[in-house]
Length: 390
Image 1 (cartoon, rainbow, N blue to C red):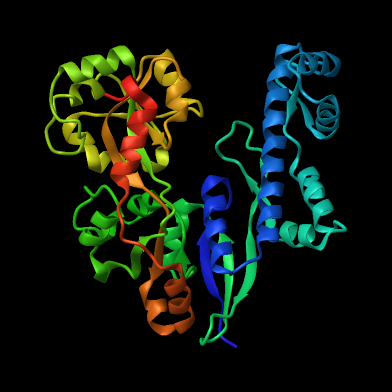
Image 2 (cartoon, rainbow, N blue to C red):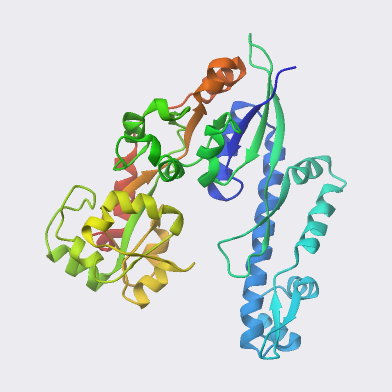
């Protein structure tokens, strides 16, 4: 029996939902299993957000359980949920002698997940067995989160051989590396991670989307190939954010709306103080902005980078999807064109594709697309942001 085809998908979030919807449409997995997967992951996300709120309330209420319960009640939290959370959450004593509240320990979260693995409903059991725990590195305290792990499937296309496959939840920033090392065969994850990890395989790092990357790929340096878009139209842009008064000063300097088309007088604004960023994209921003040549410095931004950008009057580079967060953050604006655009793509290990017909069958049914809807996304973003887009 041949080895199964290994397919990387996002482990959680909106991208995970969208990719699984497409896979259901293709008939690879059953819709009821996907429904349960999404429910279990979202329920656990709500658990973590509740615990995060209780940790803050605990400190604000003086570090006692009763005071925290009263505060949670005033904020409208469900008291049964609060009581259950406080019962399982960890306490620890700080250096100042105060008792602090922390997220539910990993072993207790594992117990919660195990209950679903032994549920009376077979579909719930199947979905829960496809999940595992992962540290959420984006949150202070690093809580254990339930995320997608793996799910086996069998696909029997008409007139062709049966294909065995395994969907594997893979954080998108490591997917290209796994493809290169033959640890994955197909990737259904975001383009921006490929830009971030394949700079050594490009004849120029100044590419802004997957099409430009494909055009500048040095194929002798890697077996990774981007075959096209998955067609989800799930665009996002890495955009420059500023407070409105700073944005107006930037525009007054003149120059192009594009930050990546050579010398631009607007760069003077980015030199005023370190630009807040997500550190995993530092190399990308460094190359696209020629940061060293332009005297631009970067600083790792906090979780609430949009709010800090406004409150501390800082420039930032951050991911913008629909523009919803920008629209509800007072005085926050997007300045200029996005540095790079990302969407869910279909990528493969070419050497594996050449030698395994099963991979080719799945790629054929995925039907990678070459259609570019970037301008439609930009127009929708402009409509959403109005005068917050400079």
